[in-house]
Amino acid sequence: MKRREFTITCAGALGSCVLASPVLSEEGEGAKKKLPLAACGLDCNTCGTRVKGCEGCHGPDDKVWCGQCKMRTCCIKEKKLSNCSECDDFPCEHNTEFENDKYQHHRKAIARLRKMRTERDAARRQPRTGAEGSPKQGE
Image 1 (tube, rainbow, N blue to C red):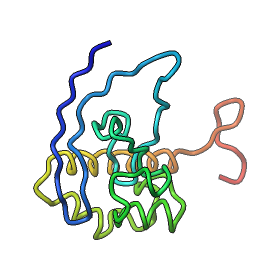
Image 2: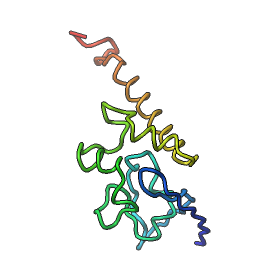
Image 3: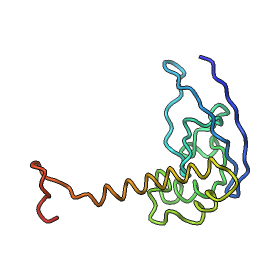
Image 4: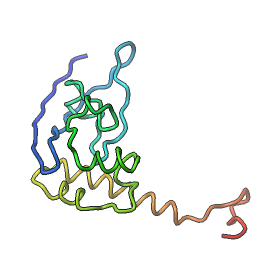
């Protein structure tokens, strides 16, 4: 399988990241495992940095693109969350700083987190139903 990769490195205020380029999925031996969404909302599975040994922000400290990323430190290392959309403080100053820098892919990443947060909040507002489709007692 041929793969064309184009990467552009940015140096945002929160650290550096790489403008995502499609990475074709491979199957069989040597296939790359699917990575979880980055703390900031970037999809590590489509990021061109993976070919350079990055294992995404959930990976070990020596296998991440930017070990000094404020969002990774706060979200994953300190609060033990999967991504910033799960945080009670979302969006925080780290998110808005990242969202408002000059990189469009950062805006898209935070927009992805905002959508996830909206969907999660909507799901929480839905009444849970019993077997017959009526609300459970006490709700």
